[in-house]
Image (cartoon, rainbow, N blue to C red; front, side, top):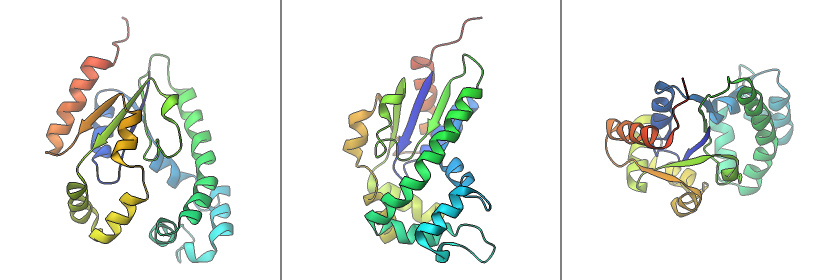
Amino acid sequence: MRIGLTGGIGSGKSTAARRFAELGALVVDSDRIAREVVEPGTPGLAAVVEAFGPRVLGPDGRLDRPALGKLVFADEAARTRLNGILHPLIRARVVEIVAAAPAGTVVVQDVPLLVETGQAGSFDLVVVVEAPPEVRIERLGRDRGMPAEEARARMASQATDAERRAVADVVLVNDGSPEDLRDRVDRLWAERVPVPPG
């Protein structure tokens, strides 16, 4: 079974993903893979530097993610160019990981841009984690030290709640504690995930 997990920045999607892993799912984290495909020496990093220049590299030769983020979150054309480089690399790596999973594995693909990249139809179940904008802004400030203005800009660059709901099979509202969200994931797992025979 393939589950697509998505939600806007600050929604609590990572908490849900951790709980799915604890329940026995193979969680394939697109953000982690996005970092992997731009490690030093990879074709991905070379392509990003070619597109955006050496200003996106730190002194250690690694990708300076905050510098790149400032460039692309304020410029839709730059974001589109970056996505054109990264998304094919990420998808190819995801295919490798999923293909290597044992039969009967519940695979949860944690895909922040699932809606934006038109992947909803690839999954047996699409789960959206949602939280009110003011809650997300507060979390991003508290947990990541992100100024409210930057949080709003990041949120504005992503799909809207309505766009996510339009492709969702299940919406997990995360306006309470992390424990509340974990309980909602547990209920979803019990109700919607088939138990393998034997």
